[in-house]
Image 1 (cartoon, rainbow, N blue to C red):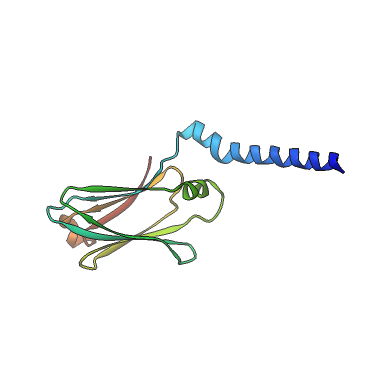
Image 2 (cartoon, helix red, strand yellow):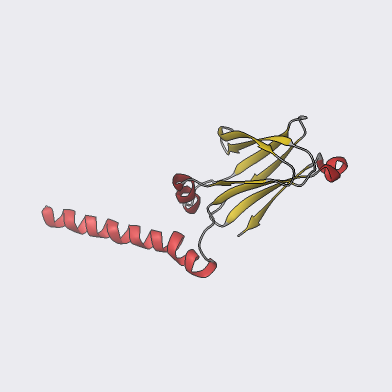
Length: 142
């Protein structure tokens, strides 16, 4: 019985090592180290802005919500936590909606996976008010 338990334990270890190799080590070797940055907000405007960032998961539950006050030409970065970074490597449904809302209730949303090498960039600029409500959101693979 002990011999069977040892064999099962070794087999589980080998399977775990293969999974870690396939989903974490191999991509890191080919693409590079994953980014720890979740999103970046930059105020390209010449006035102060208050922006609220909300991240909603695929189950329509808010997983992050915070308000930032940005001076003109100021930028803020938010980094992924260890659990969020580990989860981004696993083959689960990792779709999120990122919503940015300015103090005047102008908002923009962005659907993303927030994968290990993906960061979301949020830019506030009054020049774009006529086009997309002053907020530009896009992702970039870093």
